[in-house]
Each structure stands twice: as structure tokens, then as C-alpha cells.
Length: 165
Image 1: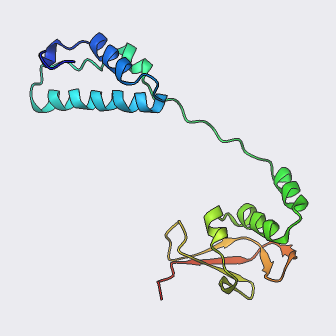
Image 2 (image 1 turned 90 degrees about the vertical axis):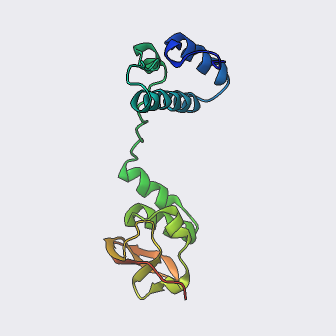
């Protein structure tokens, strides 16, 4: 499209039409990424080849069209609602999982990786946590491995990175 033109002759309208043709049917994030890449390319040319080149992507119109959207805020669930969900859960396995996530601050993946051998007395040991910490003790809940009805806070979760044996 711009093969026979000089770099400094490219205008913001040319960039807009190029991005519109290139990104038809794409998601907004893809459009922003392509704009960002093109802007970075012109900045590279300006910084390395010729400092007199104007970046056609630096116009207010293009910046507004391709600006980053503010992140969407998570809706915080009230503690009473979490308690009600846990209370109404009938299967002991699912109840323990919800208790560990809600009260122990565990991630879904960490809960799903728990094996019976990870529970010793009233201590739960996590192998390879996402936090990457060597060991960590956090407030959680007491677990009787045989019954979910004996759940009452707090107890200690020992977190460590288990080396493969």
C-alpha cells in the first residue's frame, strides 16, 4: 500500500485507512495492538533513522480511537452470600473445596491438586504453589480428611515447593 511512498509523506488519514482495512472484523484488542505496533515502528524510525520524521500515529484522533479501555472492576461478593453458597453445598468434596478457596485464599488449581497424602493431622501441605514461595503459613480452616462436617476455622496451610522425587 505504501511501497512507493516516502515515510515522511504518510499522514494520519493514511494510517487510519490502513488500520481500518487491515482490522475489519477484528476485536478491539487486536485493533489496539496493531495501532500500537505501527506507532512503535514510526517511533523506531524517528529515533534511529531520522529525528525529523513526524509520527502519523501521534494525533489526538487516532489516540482516542485506539486508546486502552479502563479495566473492568470485579464485583465483590458479600461474605454472607459466600457463607450461604457453602452452606447449601451438599457434597462434602465440593464443600471442602469452596471452604479452602473462600477461607484459605487458595486458588482453584491448588485445591484441585490436593491429594490425601498432602493432609497430615491438621496440616495441609501444598506442592508447587503459584506464589512460588518456599514456605508460607496462612490462615485457613481445620479439615478432617474423613468428613466435611468438621470444618471450623482456623488452621495453618504449609506451602512449599516440592522437589520431584
